[in-house]
Length: 185
Ligand SMILES: [Cu+2]
Image 1 (tube, rainbow, N blue to C red):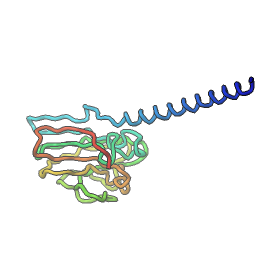
Image 2 (image 1 turned 90 degrees about the vertical axis):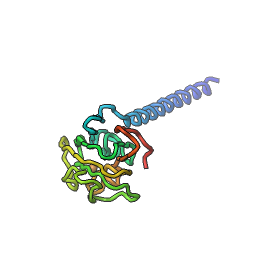
Image 3 (image 1 turned 90 degrees about the horizontal axis):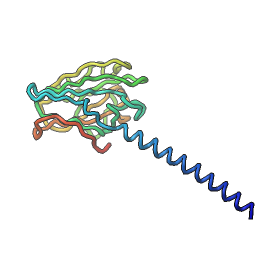
Image 4 (image 1 turned 30 degrees about the horizontal axis):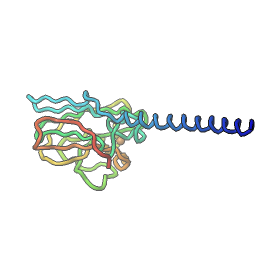
């Protein structure tokens, strides 16, 4: 009678340990999912001057090996702006490992490997192929003159294809800018 009891205890202990490890793994996943959250301070709108200012951070989190904007990739974040507003991206690269850049491009089925012409005049950080090193950035100012859906894309070769792009929606149907999450593509 003793031996089976002890065996049962051992199995129980083992199951308990496995359960604890599993719970730990689930907890870590939940935490990383939680980091993909919109911070309301990222977007500032001024209706009088029709200006939308967006804090756009490359490599904000470790998601996708740092190849993310504000922790999002593959279209998981959508900035909507009214057509004809002044759009300002306060771009900064906080990725400790990789250089990054930004340009607004047409919404295409096949994500480009590297730089393509921007969808709007001045809608680019410049240095788009080599990118900005860690801790550096620039302001991007442009006026989206046509409504539609566009991509905010990192043009450093390979980054966009790896998922480093989010969305810009230019709309005639809204009177103020907004940020929202969306399903990743
Ligand atoms: Cu990049």
